[in-house]
Length: 143
Image 1 (spheres, helix red, strand yellow):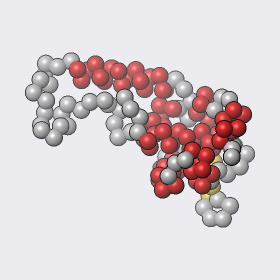
Image 2: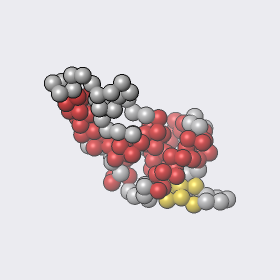
Image 3: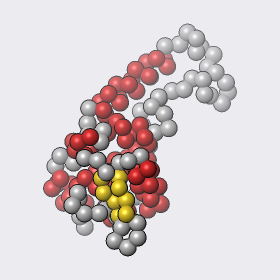
C-alpha cells in the first residue's frame, strides 16, 4: 500500500509541532524545513486543526501547536485521515463495472487482510515514537 502525500505531509507537520512544543510553528517554517508546497501545507494544517490535532492562531505572530499530547496521537489515525480509503482494492468500484470473478475471488480478501496488517502496525506507533530522538531531528531540520 502506498501512502499519499497528504498523509506524509500531515505526519511531518505534526512531527514538527512535536519537536518544538514550547512555541508556535509556522507553515513557512515547515515549508522550508521539508521542502513542501505552502499551499498543500495550508490545507493540511487546516484539516488537522479541524480534526482537533492542532491549535492554530491567525495573524502576525500566528502559527500552530499540538492540541493533544504526542503520546495520544496515533500514526494509524493520521494516515487514515489522509487516505481516501483504508482498502487496497475496490472490486465493485471499477469503471468497466464489477469484476467478473468477484463472487469466487479471494484476492480482495487477501488485500484487505494485508491492509489491516498495515494499519495494525501503524496503530502500534504514536507521534511520540516518531520524534523519539528530537535532538537529531532538530539538527537536520534547522537551517
